[in-house]
Image (cartoon, rainbow, N blue to C red; front, side):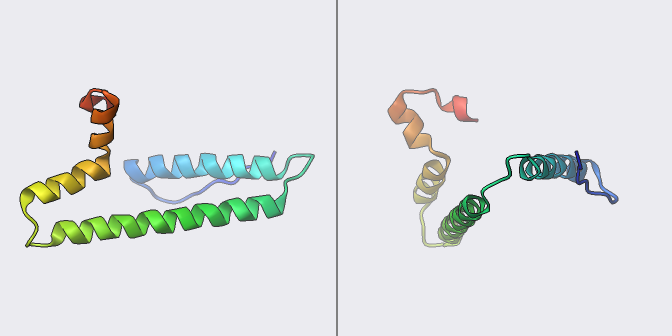
Length: 102
């Protein structure tokens, strides 16, 4: 089985990222080289949906950061934004301890 690998100088953190990326690439190559093949159209649609999802999440994060940078927001409003972003109200509603997600 062919395996794709990344090479280059890395520090410890980027070495972990490269190792993870190398593993993902290896799994993708292994999937594509299966004997029964892969449905390319399904893969294309799945990748398109994931890219759209990433764009929406990035836009949401950008909006939250813009709100947090505003000087006219009082600290409690900023706290509520961060709590909502982290899902703390959902943990309280579910009756879970708040430290379970941290």
